[in-house]
Every structure is written in C-alpha cells, then in structure tokens.
Image 1: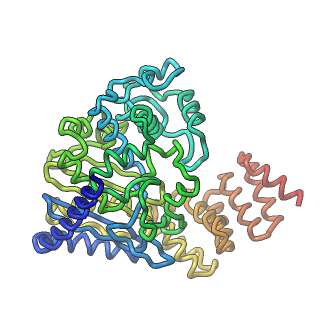
Image 2 (image 1 turned 90 degrees about the horizontal axis):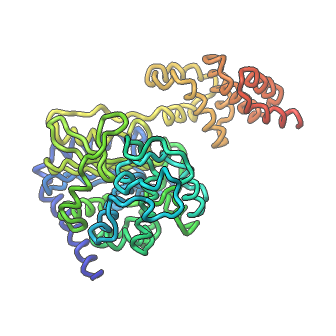
Image 3 (image 1 turned 30 degrees about the vertical axis):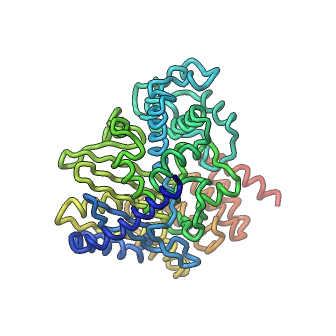
Length: 484
C-alpha cells in the first residue's frame, strides 16, 4: 500500500511538471507578471515561494531568494517552510475524519473527553472549538515555552472564558490544541501519527509534519525575521526536544512544502481524504469574525469575492515564517504562498497574485524593503553623524512608521540584541527621546544605550528620568548600575 501511494505521489508530481510545460503558452502573461513582480522583490528583501494552479493548469510553482543565506541555498517548490496556523485545517480535517469513522461527533461536549471540568466549560462543543466560538483566550503561553501536557490543560481549563460558549467569534489557538488532544483520545494515536496515517500518506505528502517525516534537511529553510534576525527551521527545535508541546500542537507549527500543499489541494478536491458531505462541513461559513470581514468554517476563513463567488483561505505566521492559502472553488483557482522573511511589506503577496490572475489589467505595486531592513542597511553603510539623513529618508519613504514612538526604539534594541553598531543604537535612542520627551520607556532604552557604550553616569541619569516619568522597570537597572 505504501509503495503504491509513493508511486501515486510521484505520478502526481510528474503530472505537475507536465502541466507546467503544457500550459506555459496558455498562461504566459500571468506567469510573466507574477514572476517579474516577485523577482524584482528579491533585491528588496523578498524570499519565499509561490504556487498557482487554475482549472488544472499549473501557472507557476517557483521559489525566490534564499532559503539559507549562508550557504546560498535557494528557495524552490520543495523548500520546507513553517506553515503556522494553516496547521488548523489539518486538525479540522482530522476531526471530520474521526466523525466519518464514527469515533466522535462535532456536537460532542468537552465533558465527553475531559473529566473534572469547571462548570462553564463542560458543555463547550467540538463545533464551537472548530469555529473559534468556544470563548477561550487566544493562547496561554509562547510557542516554545516548556510545559507538560497536564500543566497545559490544567491552566487552560482554569482560565476565564472571554465570552459565553457559542456567543461570538474569538480566535483561539488553545481551542485547536484541545481539538488536537481530542484527536489523540478518540484515535488512540498521537496527533501527528493520526494526521500522517489518514491525511498525509493518502495524499502522497511525505514532507509535511513535525517530527515523523524523513526530512530532507538540505531543504529546511532558515527564517529571517524582517530579513534581519536569523533562526533555524522550527523542525530543528522539535528535534532537539524530541517533542512538540501543546502551545503549538494542533494549532500551529507544522512544516510543509509547496509541492506537498499542491498534493493536499488535489486530495481534498478529489475527496481522497474526506467524503463530499464532510468537505462541505469543512468549508461552510458558520460564524462571523470579530471584525465582520469574513466568516469562519472549520480551520478555514470563508468570504465572498467581488464577483460574489466563494473564497476559502487561511494564513499563518510565527513572525518570521508566513504562509497563505487562497482557494476560489468556483474559479478553480488555488494559491500557496510561503515566505521565510516575513514583514508587513510581503504579508499580502498571495492576495496580489490572486488579483493578477483574476483581474486582467491588474499590476501590483512593486515590493519595497521593510522599514527595519531599510534602516539596518543604512546603519551598516553610514556613520552616526548621518543620523539626521536617515530620519529624512524615513520621513520620505516610511512616514507612518516614523510617527510611532516605538519604531526607532525597536531598531536600537535590535542593535543591542545583535551586539553590533552600538554607537548607532545610542544615537537612535537620543533621537527618539528628543521627539517623544515624556515617554519613560524611551528614556529607559536610552539608559540601556549609554550602558552598552560604557557611559555609566549618562545611563544613571537616563534611568532616573525614566523613573521620574513613571517607568518603574528602570529602578532595578538603576540600583544594579549604582552598585557597580
């Protein structure tokens, strides 16, 4: 059976390559627009991958920029990216698979699976967890904070609900962690093992998961937060601990490739994973989002296009990696976008690509460098006496960012964290307190800048000013510095 599935996977991928060749003429203009748009973005810090298939025709499936800068490894359709909250669609699909197996019902309450629950959580249903309407908070800790299973669920079930179950939409990662645990309790398998057996293997996906795949380590992308701070693949972190904790499991952190996500689309479309009635459940809009801009199904956001056709989409991000899926069922258009250098300037690329395909005369605005990367590049190339020139450039190109008192502060703190250009960090802190004189937090950062440059007396004065302005966190730093 496994050999047959692997063979099927190979055939599908070969078919993909064949389609790409056959349709190069038919979709030449679309390919050229997308490829030019993204290629031009590389010099502005863009790196990632895009896949677009329409009516069975693979328009583009290509990587851009570096997966790993140090080794000059390029992104490509087999590069492995963290897909973030797009993990949720796998969780919701697994729940519906278990319902098909008569092992649960989406109307089941939490008290069916968990004992000694507080009264306010006993009647929360699986449906409410799937639609983010159970009332749980978004999270109770950071992705990689150590926590045991018992501790996680004890804390979660003791937490206060934000609203009455079923009352309104409130996006909740922990709600999907509960679903992940229900998958384990009803199947008798680990969360990842169940997904692998009933979702990934039938679809032919062998580079999707947390720990189970035989990962192609040469294809594991590094992350570059705002194209500045480097991190290894999240898979490396899972392998170091030998597990994925419940802050992530079920709601985020799965890794995958463009080619695997193409196989996932084909498997869903052809009802290889779910029966048609289950797929309809998966993509039915149940509850309006808090902003009223879309409705939520089971692990998918559902909205209408300008043409009043359905759009099924979702995105996920850990701040460094970002991943978007957009599916127009009636137009039979499916887009997968991944980046390993996330910033506000590249977050909406999937939507821009959709417009290129659907709007004949649409040409997107060029990708521009994010403000953090722009500033760091300038700092590396110029002495501090050019700081006023930097402010002028920022005012011309990133005026909205400069209005925020936290921006220059963030750049200075990045330099301190990286332990480089410390003179520039101090200069930026000085500029910031000149612009926002009554902000104690900024005076605290100025103290950090003086201290990093071994200017003790100036640091003491800055911390004292921060305390005077009500920023009490400076007191401990001040006390420590005076003792030295």
